[in-house]
Length: 268
Image 1 (cartoon, rainbow, N blue to C red):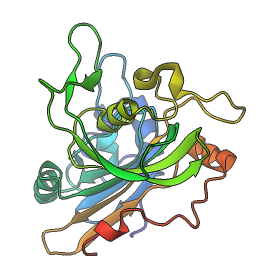
Image 2: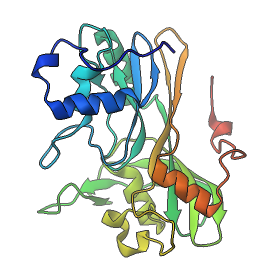
Image 3: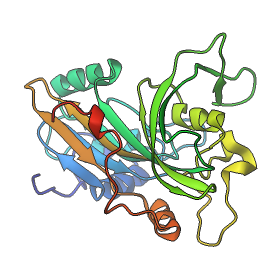
């Protein structure tokens, strides 16, 4: 990976950028996981939206003019993460890269692995959740729910990495489809909501213990994606601070944890 220049002053629209966008670009430039001539990967912090909306003046899209790094155009968003989900976010640095990355995400050939702490004990140590999801009607905001009649198909593979009695578990997840809030809805439907996910798990999503954050414990841990030339791009993001503290508090061992999906891996 090449040495990264400062984000300040980069990009054709530098003079038009707001100060907040410039400051965010500087912050994100310190969170770069990987960069080459085609792809830029950042470790998106929890609480930061990828795109703007009502009440979201700071977002990744607004800072992209400051992440050009000597390229003539700003990088392009090719997929999204929920506001409160942290981890690997890929950006395309060229039009050609935007095409093949978009196609990979559209056809679900990109392997995305998420880590979550969930409340409770999944009945099976490994399985597939196949429950259709639809957006709730009315003034529920952007909230999804299982809807067996009108929902769109949503499928998530999961595997328990480590279990702490019946109270909580570390779960690895691979969504096969890309519905809004899919992992959160699916885990809540199983009865094991993501720790900190009051939106879908209610009060059950919180554990009363000193040292446990009430933030959402869902992290886009890694992405593996095949390039047009046949080589693989693999990017991994460390746990955000609040999840790292929880892992330490609960005694989850990242050093010895094996990849629960290893038997499903093709090349690489």
